[in-house]
Length: 338
Image (cartoon, rainbow, N blue to C red; front, side, top):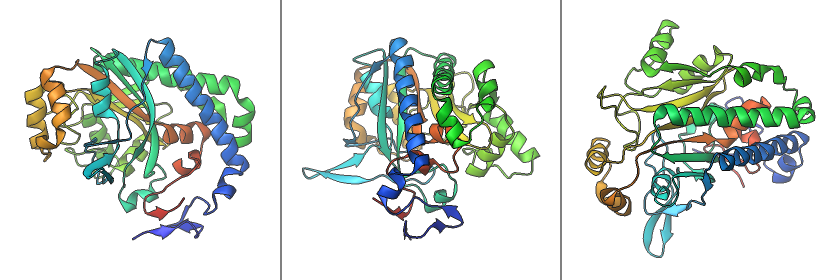
């Protein structure tokens, strides 16, 4: 069941205006988009300065990230062949390392998220990511890149745009810990134990659910990593630990103040046999991934990478109620809109 944006709210949440003009000419929208433009410029400044090459990934392909958490893919007809809109660029990021050892892209993604995610304030059916991939990197090395990138972006916008933060009523002192202290870390098992201790019924074999992420996030004063998710909770491309079977060499980065997940990443699996086994374990048909598996069989670099949700990151910096406020043409799950 879908609704339209003509109604001002759904399930008690503020919806985007039905008229794009009303949204685009809103003083709040304009201020948020100025801040976001500065964030993207700062991201490019940091990443190109660190030797990363900007790539332009495809927006359609024969396969895409199989995703999870109930989201669905969008099919398009490509001259009689069933193609997919990209749910993430992850397979193409791994392939792009054949051209450059360190790459990034800023690209749109489309996921038909479950209707119930319209209530999370964090989900959009169409969103953008800052995607980064680095050949030969370990998880510790790529999380160091992520931490420095986030710190650079926040430092740049706080320094350069004080008037915008004042217009949004966002007190920039909330970023003091982020700018001056190392991000915290906890394992998935530790996060589950904390949630159960708080009375939240978190499944230890699954992703941290939306409410659990928000609860952990609300108890922190700075961003923090959650690492070592259980095998089966993520896609076939997250590398399994050789020392700790059943545990993945991956991570999420959660924002403080209840804003929840900003970013996911991992060391990538790059061994052909292990990828095919993981595909079958997760219910994926390897035959669909012909071009990708051919590259893997012939050899792709070991790597690690991540993707930051641009609208979620903007929401956190600007102190917004919903991620849709950080998108010029927002599409909430299940809400028909331009």
